[in-house]
Every structure is written in structure tokens, then in C-alpha cells.
Amino acid sequence: MRILFIHRDFPGIFRPLAQCFGSMPDTTTLFLSERGGKSLKLPGVRRLRIAPTDLPAAGAGDAGESIMSVVLRRGTRAANAMLRLRRDGFSPDIVYYPADGGYGFYARDLFPDALHAVRADWFSTQGESHLFFTRGAARPPADFAAGRARNLCRYNALGDCDLALTGSRWQWSQFPDFLRNRIGVIHDGVDSAFFSPDSSDCFPGLPPGAEILSFSCRGTDPSRGLVPFLRALPRVLNLRPGCRAIIMDTGKDSADSVREAVRGAVPETMRSRVLLPDFTLTAYRTMLRTSTLHIYLTAPDNLSAGLFEAMSCGTLTLGSDTPPVHEILRHGENGFLCDFWDHEAMAETAARILDMAPRFTGLRETARGTILKDYDLATQTRRHIMLLLDALELPGGRGRMFDCLLVDEFQDVNPAQYELVRMW
Image (cartoon, rainbow, N blue to C red; front, top):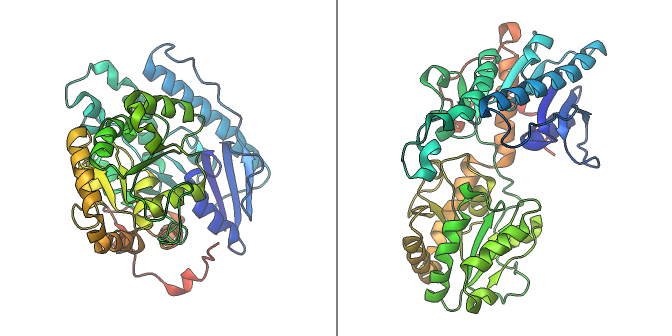
């Protein structure tokens, strides 16, 4: 079997799948990408580069026109790389790429006989995600030009593909009705073996058993709620005199902007109680393991890994009461919910949870159980691969379309086929 992944970043969202296919016998796994560390390698996976795309200057010209220009440039550069593969005799059985970005724009033309799978992770609408930061107030029609242009790329990918998958029921619900029955729902999963509870772990500089309020962000990205959290933080620290806060920035080259935001929001008398450690994966996990309460905020957007990682560690979590979060976090059952915008209520809720934290052992266990049942990385990767293999084996090699298949519908599979999937 021969499989070709295409993504801007290597290995990006396809890391688990690429690792798995790379370890399978009699399988050739290639990965086309524009970016990625030169030293990063996956066993059994051959990486090939796409020529970088020159991006228009910020604010130059019409937004929609600029986006389509980038999409077509990326499509052409990726097509040139695929054309070289075809000339070298490579003919994939599966081509897998995101519906966004344009890298698979001409993939069907170059490999018409392959099974084409796409990740349909976003569709721009004029609904809650478009109006979230205006609190529902209408925006000028021109503000949606970029969304229209990006949707053209998604229409092209979904019109050409044999199998389309998205990461959550909420993401699926954003697509138009006539496209939904072409898209299945399966989350990538979280490495629950790594992100696991460990009461013996201790965050450097803090005593064992310290009361800790934790928060992670990706720079100052407004969709991840750093500003509302910082508005709530002084009140929490005032209500809980023994509490320490840990804010960890998981973005690249954004630590200074986060520190500046903290200095502007937290009174100087409280700053010694706020830790801003550098990000490493083990330090991040220790933060989650030792946290008394973790706050996770997101606008209506794709759920970031942070919520799943916190719950996988059995961390007591207060999440924003926004639609994507509802899918996994259930108030009073495996976590708690708060208003994204109401920082005063957020602070009061966080303080009450911190005060009652010792009573919530069962809730922490339920959060971990939610991950193990429906979002475990190894299980989800097997399910993901089974979808690809099942689609490939249908008559004519064309995939089936789905009526919103959910992860719990993938239980009955052929055990013999599972033997093909050797997890890393």
C-alpha cells in the first residue's frame, strides 16, 4: 500500500497516522510539506518538500483575492511536487490532505485513481463564530470576504474527495446541510499514557499540595481567552490568599507579549504569586498534574488540545460555556462551565471550586474516564486508520460517504485488520 500525506507543516495533524503507516509492513508512506524542522524524522516516513509560497503583504489588496492567490500558489507548488512523484513512478492508493490551505487543490487531477481523504476541520459561517467577538452585533458584509474565499477551497476539496472527516460534532454542524452527509466525525485523540495523573509529581518552586490555578495560552490569541482570564485572576488571588497561579504560553516567540499582558492586568503586590514558566512538554504536564483547578477558555472554534490534555491528567477543569466545549465538558459531571466574557462570575466560580476541590475526586476520575472512553490517541488512531482501509477496500476503491458517523459507531471492526496497525 502507498499513502501520501500533504500538509503545510510536517508532521502537523497527521503525525499519529503517519507514524502508524510508517511502521506498517509493505507500506510506502510519503509526506509532502512546506515547513518543519530539518532534523525531525518519523521512522518509515519519507518527507519531501513543497516550495515555499510567497504571501501577499499584510493588508495588501482585497482580502478574498489575496486568499485565493495564496491558495492557487500553494496548489501549484504542491502539484509540481506531486508531478515529480508521478514521473518517478509513484502512484498512491491514498492521498490525505486538509480541505483548507490549497495544498490538495490539484491532487485529484494528478492522482485520479487514488482514494482522496480530506480533513474538513472548518467552514466559515456568519453565525456564532463570526460574531463572537462583537457579542452578536452585525459586522459589515466585507468582513466575510475572507471566509467566502476560504470556503471556495473547502468546496473544491469536499467535491473531489472520497472520504471527509472532521474533529467534532460542533465542527460538523458548521457545514451546510448538503455537505454534512459527506463528512464523518472522529477526534484525533490525546496521548492518555503520557498525559496521566501522578500525585507524586511536583511543580518546581512550589511545595507539594500547594493550591494552584493554572492556565495555558497560545500567545495572546484572543480566541483562547487570555484577556478574560487575566481580568478574573486578581479577584481569584484576592479571594484565595494561599493560591498560586501558573500561566504557561505554548506559542512560539510570544512569551514577551504574555508577560506584558500579565504585568498590565495583575497588581504588582500579587505578581510574586503568578508563575510564568517556559514551556516544555514535561513542565506543561507537571503543571496539569499538580493544578488544583485549570481554566480552559475558547471562542467558538476548533477545540485545542489543552482541554483534552487537562482532562486526561485528571485535572479539575473550568471551561468556557461555548458550544465546542459542551461536546466534552459536562457541568458538574466531569468539569465545570463559566461565561467566557463574565470575568467577575468566572473569578467567583473559580474561588468556590478551589475551596471545595478536595470533594471533587470523583469528578476528576470521570474526566479521565471521558478521555479513555472516547478520546484516547491509540484507540482513535486505530479507528481513523480503519476508516481509511475500509473506504479503500470498497468496490472501485472509492470511499463511502457518512451520515455523521461518530466515534462510538466504529466499535465493530475486523480484528484481523487491527493486526495491520502496529502502534508506535
